[in-house]
Every structure is written in C-alpha cells, then in structure tokens.
Length: 319
Image (cartoon, rainbow, N blue to C red):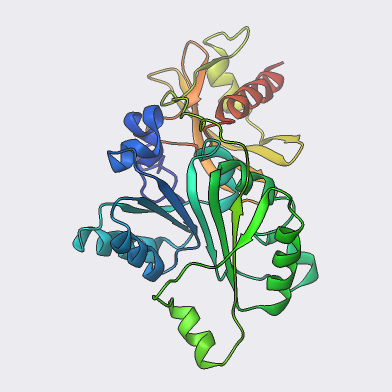
C-alpha cells in the first residue's frame, strides 16, 4: 500500500481537514482571532480578496476557488504581502456553505462574476439559484450583506428577480469598491454591461451558531465483525454503491494490510450540485471504520451520517 496518496488532492490547503485545532474551533483557529468573517466565492487571482484584506484589516476574508495552481500562487502572494487576515481554500462552494459555515457566521458573502452556465441543461450548476439561496441566507448574520456581480444580462436578471422576491432581503446600494478583477477589466474594455447587486439580510437579532467542534475522524463500529473477515472481504471484493437522496457513495477499491489485519478502502462521494470527491477509509482488525490515516472528508455537519451509511453498505456486502 506504499505510495497511495491518502490526502485528497482536491483540497487546498491539504492539511486543513486533518488539523485537530481547526476541527475543534473552526475558522477562528485558522485566523487565530474572532474577527468578523467574510467569504468570496470564486476568488480567482485574488485581486478583490487582496484589496478587501488591505482595506479592512480588522476583518477576516476567505476566498474559495477550485483551481489549485491559482490558489497556491494567491496563497503565497497573501503571505508575502503580510495579509494574514485573508485565506484561500479549494472547496466546492455549495458544499462549503452547507458543511463548513455555522448559522449567522458571515458578515458579507461576495459572488463576483460567477460562471453563467449558458446552456439550459446546465443552469442547475449556477451558484445563485432558488435551491442555493436558503444556505446563503442561513450563513449570513442578521444585518449581513449578499453581493452579486455579473456581466451576463440573463444571469443578472434571473438573480435580481430571485433576490428581489426574497422577503428577508432588502436591496441596498452596492459598496464602493475601487479594485477591478482581471475579468471585470476585460468586460469593461468590451463595453459589456455589468450588473452589481447588494442586499441586506433583515432578520430579528439572534446569537450566531457556535462551531460545534469535530473529532479528527468519527469511529463507526461494524456490527458482528470478525477479524478473519478482512482477508475474505479483500479477496472477494466487488465495487459497492449506495444511492441516497441527493448523493451516491461508491467503494471503488480495497487493499489489505495482512500484518495489521486492516482494510484500506478507496471511496467516491458524488453529490448533486457539488464536485465528486475521492477519500479513503480504513477498517481496523477490531472492525472499527474511520477515515484512513492522513485522509480527510471535507464534510463536517454530515460526516458522521455519511460514514455510518458507508459502514452499513460494507456490512451488507459481508452478509
């Protein structure tokens, strides 16, 4: 089993979801303070993120994107410029909103020039749509702001209609922002119309949800497990699949460490509206299922449920 990359390469920084301090304390552990938190979805080359971090040093900023090369470059630039109130992370935006941000945890949510997904059959991939708006409202603090910018007239119109129809949101003037992103400069040179929308969340004041704290990995016992089952499971292994509402778990491959009596399982999690994710699980000689050493699963709110369902899937293959 030597050479198997256990840490998921879709994550940046790679250590984040194996860090006990982050899992226990959340984003304040990464920033080492409790300052107001802001999120930019699709930070790209980081022009906006860097600008905001300089302009508001008393606040924290997280930028999400899915391109490793750009994120590494941006991460190094933020460190070089001493912008320790800004961090970047490679995570699917829908997943991150649902799994990693407690209720009322964001002062501002910025969605700047998202992919419009022009084709009708791909409209469901848009970040701003009726299905995703409830999560955005959940993570915003009362009085927090949602900002949306697009150069696509149809997408902008759809977003405006959606946000205007939301009773919890009040339209407000778009903030004065001097910086222009790479693509914004390009669209302005082409004389494209750019739509800028800002809304404030109007909800009764209530305390924000605290970060609940998570173990490095939940441990799920397999029922009626016997040590001799490990080798038999490996020899007779067939790929497994569990389909539930909105997601699919697959167990794709199985490896056996005879000296330790443990199994190593390569798995895939596919969820509607999110990037597919590979992760690794191990079953100890005592029948304890948990994330493999060095691996991670960037689901926190629902990670226990996912591992329990995977355990039941493995149990069904043993009968």
